[in-house]
Image 1 (spheres, rainbow, N blue to C red):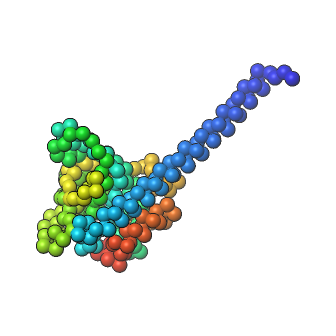
Image 2: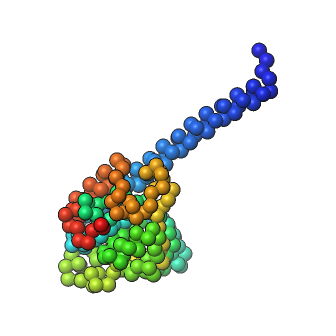
Image 3: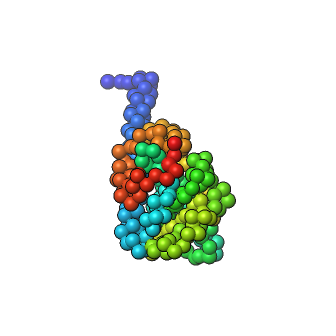
Length: 241
């Protein structure tokens, strides 16, 4: 049986379309899997940090936080001057509990003098209305748009109230099992639009997600339930309206 050039061309076009559709479906599934893993890893970070009360985030600090962002395995690099880059998720208090998670990226900034590179877990707590508004803008610079400080750890917070008066953002990091407050001045926090499309199937405004206007996806159940365990929704001081 002989095939004309036109029939062969149409056949090749059809095969190419099928292959492209298959590849697109596979890539979409892989992307969905990546954000699901990131949410689960964020839950693990919270569990591991809070499992040692004397060395974790103090309950009263976490209870006062209006929003929380967790960036698992942020890459910290540097030779003399440090930098960082990572992907994570943020959520804010609303009248009905913690909001659906909003994917974020954190990039730039300085971690002080350092040599080499390593992956660290980063936790940021947004403590007041001004800090919350900066986060809702979908892009802000730590230390410039929002004042930031290394967060108190363990029992330190019982005697130290400076964080209540000074800081819009408290930052923590964990590396090789060690957990401590750390400053990341200059780091830019913004909405990860690509990950937002993957998680919600379309682009959703950052503020809509964090104000509780979006139903949490199934992938976020473990992360949100873990956060509720350590910072119950009933501790809603100044929740978003």
